[in-house]
Amino acid sequence: MAARMKMASLLPRNLSVVIRPVQHRDLDGIERLTQESFAAQTPNGACDAMRQMQWLRSWYGLLKFLNWFPNPLQYRFCAYVAEQGRMLLGMIQVSPFNRTHSTWRVDRVMLERAADKQAIGSQLLRYCFESILEARTWILEVNVNDKDALALYRKNGFQRLAEMTYWEIEPELLQELAQSEPDLANLLPVSNADAQLLYQLDTSSMPPLVRQVFDRNADDFKTSLFGALTEAFKQWVTKTEVVSGYVFEPQRKAAIGYFQVRLERKGQQPHVGTLTVNPAYTWLYPELLSQLARIAQDFPPQALQLTSADYHPEREEYLERIGASRREHTLMMSRSVWHKLRESKFVSLEGIQLPEMLQGLQPARKPIPGGMSWAQQGQHLSSDRGAQPNTTKETVAFSYNSSVEASSQPESADAQQE
Image (cartoon, rainbow, N blue to C red):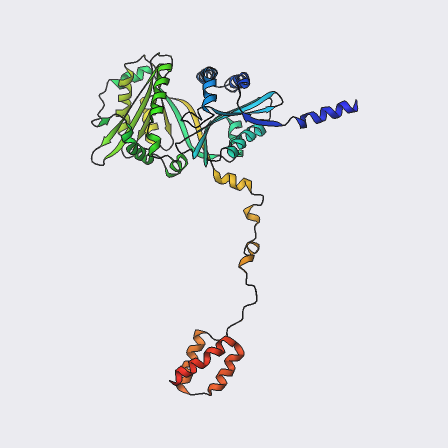
């Protein structure tokens, strides 16, 4: 009986939590975690999560094959799971945010209800921090009402970066906006030749801290041949169409506004739009929205979803004024690589004593004090002009203070005699 109790006490210690990449046998457990994680959310969020799960089951083999060698879709599905024994405790999915892979994004973290969410979630996050060495900054979005997720991310070094608001414009409101004629004289289609203009527009439309975290360049606004073919195939499979354009300012020779909208041909999902406007040209918001509404008239009537950040107050005021509804409010958080460096050190910076650090700069022996300074030398010169003392006595006095100064004194005396 005692031996059985001893084995029962040792069993939890032996079953340690293992973090590893996702395998095909984990799909059932991931689907279960998806249903539990999105059960308390809105029906739209649950439907989106289940749709992504169906897509993952259909294309898992191809995605796993693309992860084996470098290609543009190598990190299309980069996920890890936490397993204890044969039980799945959690999953994390990450992806690169920019072309240089200096900033990575935590797409989602799903945890078992019965598990210790803070401990398992921290292990998943830290595994990604330590295994993906090219990532200098991490970003994520979390709902402002999800207190458990906020506590988990703040515990692992994430800090507030910006607040995001997701808006939805009803089909009736889109029809009203489409009736007005947009005043966009220099509306041009987007191509790779305009990547530098779009990069400058993106840079001017966000504060310096957000710009530093995103770390984008002109290549992030270009589309490769493989990317264009992949996007065309995706649009053909999902029955969607993407329309984009930008407003060019001839005097400044710069782009002052940009829009992109993904339109649903089936009419089952809402249209998704993106707006980027220079802060000095906020009058473009009504014009660009009218352009989006006119484009959406050729497709089945659906709502239009837009996003605004707290550093775009004019956009939020305009969307609220026209009657758009707030769909979700999230918090964007970031984590710098300096957190990893600070956590990897065993001794904190506050406990370091400067004298101990600067021992190598201490003198090897006691310095010899000098007996002659510039002020004393000036006084001796003035006294030499007034009364001529004995040169031998002065030499003896200097040799008592410093041997180096004694050797230089005869030369000064000879110079005075000359």
